[in-house]
Image 1 (cartoon, rainbow, N blue to C red):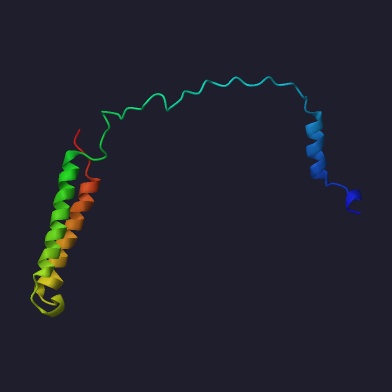
Image 2: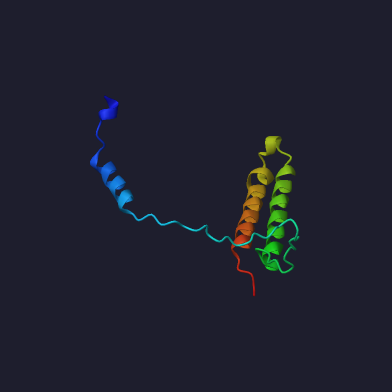
Length: 112
């Protein structure tokens, strides 16, 4: 019974359109010659631009230094479990300041 099943109209429409399309013998398309990348070594670009300017990198290093200083300040606290002023107040404020400097280091436009 499955062989006697009629196709839907959408299928017939596609088949009819395919039958009406003229069949032209196509010549093989000309391919551009492919250059071998193994025989010619590629040279790295000598003028590769860095993503940030010098000012940005200096600010990033300063931000990392401030963050490390904040963690060092937190480690200086002599209270038990670091519950003193240095561990709970001053150290975290310095660390957050370092992250703010990092934020501005990323977003600052390099001078042209």
